[in-house]
Length: 217
Image 1 (cartoon, rainbow, N blue to C red):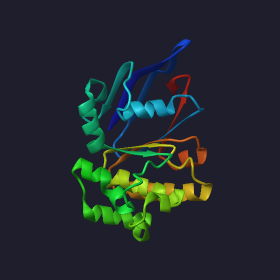
Image 2: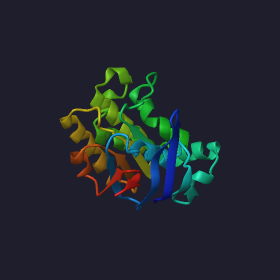
Image 3: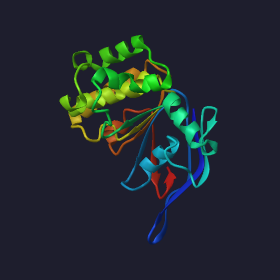
Image 4: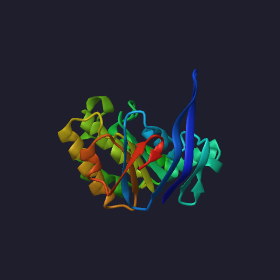
């Protein structure tokens, strides 16, 4: 499903180039789950953004299914993100002017794959039935993250990329959100790559990898 080969990425600073990734290799099979760990500043989010097509590699290649991301233009990448992947972030990124039910459907409608039956299933499993007419500002952090998960999964993506999705939640809420996510993934062939600093969260996923000195161990 996902293959990262010899990826290098640096950023320009006033002091010169800052190497972040130095020959990263990663393979993830369809339907599997992997926790990407590492110290702050190790490049975890950088790698996730490269895999999401939100940034370009300096050298190397990223394959997702039949796609090779570094060879795609911005229009192709935008279409690929809409149709192939789901994104979940620590800060939820819900659309404040839309009610919960419309936030849930947003990504799936963009992808042309809105399925009312699947959305109803997500609503039931995520415990959102009583919240559909509310706006994001009327929800707790845990409720907002459940909506964000539902939105990301509503389009039935092949790959779900999650950047510290429980990082801003308390431990009990984090455990509940993670439990719901993993249960929902059991219903789909979606592959999960999650950036997390939490050993407790990482232990729930099938595989773990650690970024250190620009490489995966």
